[in-house]
Length: 515
Image (cartoon, rainbow, N blue to C red; front, side, top):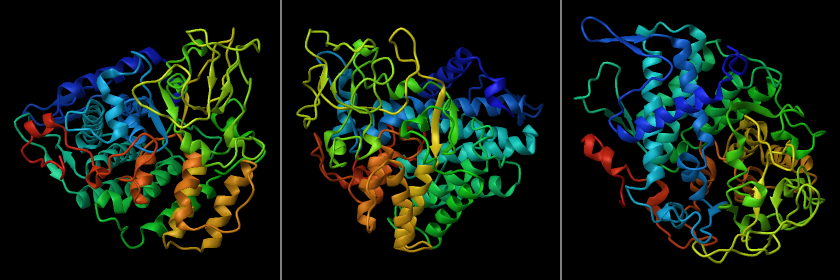
């Protein structure tokens, strides 16, 4: 199924996603809404399957495309962590404190983006379950993709909340969804992934295949991520026996399918699919501008709220791109906007100095942030990874959203090795140094597990997809630490609160400790 060729109507896709999210916000008892397909009720009132499995699958793809949103799941994964902050600038980006409470770790069960994440992912789990029901008579290739999509959505709920509500296809509105425990949900996720991978129905194409469709490499990437985070997902802090070996085996299999680092490419060409590379494992057919416009100034056509923490930028130990290509260009690149860690004087397309809206030189300075609430238009270093190809001085993002890439798989393999998986510290060092070499950075002589958190932070800053920097910090035991503009140290916040509306509608749910 060539999604890129057959589904190009972005307005229809955006409308479909908006309907799913709107219904999710209004319906916490997981009532389904189908924008591209409808369910059929048999004469006895039982679920009769979806009317069009292909359209239902497309609706599920549209659902994960919502993960590019700067709010909701992304905010929960990144703004709560040590890489990203959202600064209030005058009256801009105050939003009733919704961003500040995430950064400050002061959220409660009414937090908007936590609620939206709960509703949207649970809605997608139910839609996938209906598609996968035998009554839908879905073809085998659709079943395999839907199993992976259900696993993605369920893993996000398990990651955030530690339990997963589950409604059967024949459960009426008067039936309270059962609640899967951490272990039950973890086993359910792995069962879906194992079945999809072993089915032989996922495409095995490498980097030249259809990257908008879940293939075997994408499924193995998700399984590696689930196993790497298994101690967190299960609430034990310790991965089950064999989990790290499975991470390594899955990454090795992804590599055998033809994915790898392209050392000959410019670092930021990874996010420019016109340049081509062997690193991208999966794309989402959705707008990449959410990862750019939220960072840059209005005079660069942006929204000017998000910044990367200065502490993260300083992890590189240098501000010279000659020392590490991941730092990006310091001056004009395309249409006056550079890529990487955006700092210094910003330029117009003609090379002239840009000003802010008060007439000051638009200079993003390498200074520690002083406040989430009181900022001018210039405070904060920005990070942009998608090179721009536009006209008339305006950035022009694409719909090629990089969802999974091999560099993250390499980091998962290195970390799993250092956590006791098959291999040795030397093989982890080879993986880490392959990323440093590609970035033009000096190779390391040794690497330990304690080093990996900062190594991951330098490579994956702002890229959250399915677990994000929050999960990294929970794995490394630093989520309750302090960092730039964050002082709260609550251990219980490694899990989000069950939204109050969900508790009110499902007595099977129990609030997480601390809330």
